[in-house]
Length: 150
Figure 1 (cartoon, rainbow, N blue to C red):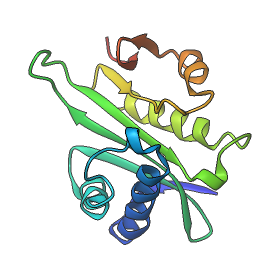
Figure 2: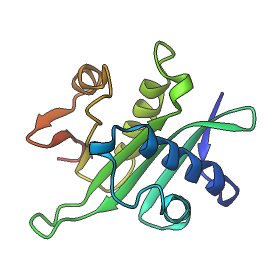
Figure 3: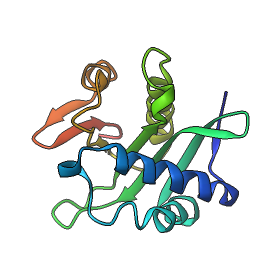
């Protein structure tokens, strides 16, 4: 398995991962328009300057992805990164691929000019809470935050 920067030729597989992720959610948790806009979202993740996107591949199949959105808030002008992470359903559980992606994302964030890295895990993401705490993330009222350059 290889972890590498996402390339334009990955857009189709990334779009499919986004589509599958949204459709695997219970109906009440699906984001309006996510499935319909999966290709557009994948294109943004790969081709925008404010996203850092890595993929985990096995052979020629993408099995995981993380991206960090570089942003600032209207209420807090301190630069931060918002982390999105996904492991293909058939590769979850006991393989530590999510942990591998998460550690890579934290290492990447430490090289960037951001002060915090945030993540909003899915409600059904088993085990992620304890892993995030072990890596130094602190729980807030709506997710987890890792102080980086503070």
